[in-house]
Image (tube, rainbow, N blue to C red; front, side, top):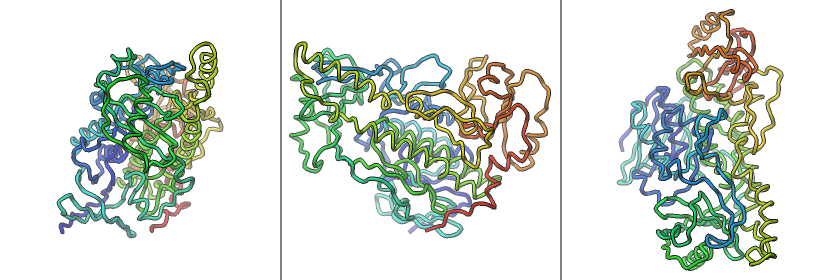
Length: 551
């Protein structure tokens, strides 16, 4: 057995899906030593595409990490690929309703966000992030290894890993992050309790190939086609422009009894015409609606699906996990670098878990209107009577499914107001609702995006750590002393001097402190006391909060 050398400040990340990889990127870019562990060596081993949308908030993280362009390049779908979600009786049957620009994947000229969402398979996301990790010298990649045992003591975490050929290594670090999904060894080993409902639905994805599908049916390409029928209602999702698809079937009675013959019949019904296809594989899974009681146990943390499990409706799973990665990444780095206290890490649960609860509830509401629940009598009948049924159903679909396909507010409108790291100014952020986003600089909110006079995104001007933005159009009130107070505490700060009446109006203040994750920590028309740095870095918590107990 080989013993790995202990490195002070090392973070061990279990799981190299998109979320675990993103934790490693966030830390590696901040010069924190990281070891990331995953059994998959070649991403071609991931047969099933899994997540297929990188949403707006995630593209903002990717842009900040320097992987947005790389990830887009790995997508099989170009910017011109249709972004429509259609509801039909079958691919060859009646069209009932459609959502345009689902998930905001269409390139557009807007101030709301810097770039659109991305249609992409999960494995292709991983390809892009792995490329970024390859250029970071502080990241050790143990692909092809399984984590066998994990433990912690007062000073360290310990992990036993085993390679495919049986080699074992013992790793020691300062912290461990579980990005290892629904069966997380980190969650189980350290006693994270999952709260909520278990096994609310049995489901299967049928991966199939049909090279002639579009041509044979004269079917316009789309992101998804919901096929509403009495026997196997579900939705068909394009996973490759070359004719590879997934038929997702939900709320089955017994997924373990689902046969290949049933899969073939389900695909035939979904297509609705005699078009050749080939079944590639079946991927059964169970949907839960539950969330960890805490995201921290001592030196251990859980992110993504290890912390929260819910319906895939809305494409929230991977994406909310990427924001988990951004939050825990900067906080761990700040503590390891020594300018923030250990108590800062307790705010990971305080800030991220309420967001997780809100997204879980929304995903569950969307799932209550699955394809199974949308089928109504007479849906496929010909003639005026059938047309009337489909017209009535169209109105229901456009109302009930908008939170699933047009949820810009869910992505960009959440706030950390009430967090001990946020300095309230007495104002209230707009209500967090799925389908509406009103940019707001109320402390705790995502900093409003804007395109600057030189054509760059304001996000590109924010520093890697804290940013003090000054939008004033005169030079009165120097900020030098305020910045010097941060530097004396070794807090890294970037100054953004951007005189602009428009920005001052948009932020409703001359000055703002922007956190490393692009959320507003404080704003005002006059600079605050230097003591504000103690709040936004968690030093105020140092004597008020004890670290969560280790298990």
